[in-house]
Image 1 (cartoon, helix red, strand yellow):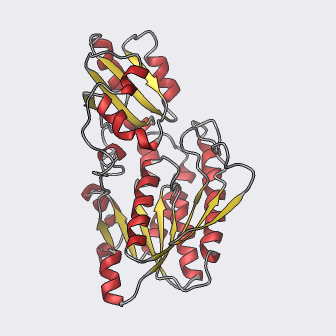
Image 2: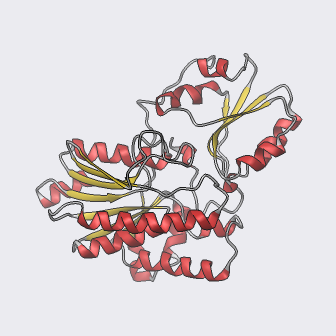
Image 3: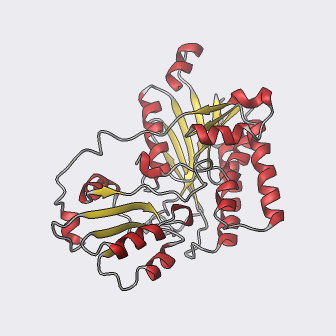
Length: 333
């Protein structure tokens, strides 16, 4: 995308990127955006990133990053501003999380509007959170440039369909904000045809062509086949028996209760849930007493290939009816 634009314009481009996660944070969307920025930089483009302090692993700012509300870094390809995410350790408190997202988005939007004095070719904003797209549009207006809205999951649809939000006023306002941001984006990028159909249905016919499908990618350099008898398998206390693993966010949209029921019926197979999330406590309670189910937290990024190789079967799950609002990150990370 950026390479084609360079050929058309005849010079390197300059972007402002708004995203909820960025290296060294381990969130899948953070890995995607980090790799995109690295590739754009390799092509000679200038990028200024506004993101959060690393917090995804345990839903709190990681050690060594606290102490400042905003941190600024200069890089060889531009700069990074990291804003405190104001996270809550209680992952199931949706009100607290929503308030934190809004405050973070407002601070990030201000930073995006002021991060560089140079003219920029586009503001690229990633959702969720949805509010990051809206403040991205405001930043683009201030900078007199275009907004490219990168939608990883469709909100509020994703939380409405899982029953996480039922308040009609909140749903109505979030839906209005969603459409408002779509209509004011120069381009909306989604991950699948199902998501594309969802977004286009919320736009006029004349605006439908602004929605584009650009799937996320797999790191085929870092993730390669390995021997199943990994050190991680030993750390988990596993032997040579078959292992089924789910690795990633343990949320309500994944429907992981089905995995526990399968484990209950197959005591000769070990099951590993590798990750964290709002539904973890409920899942642990459901699996209580099952000796063949193990829970393990997120591992460092450089162990990803080893973690995946540990299992004979990797589970990619999504609750029925959610294909039009979400694409599991396990299909690309």
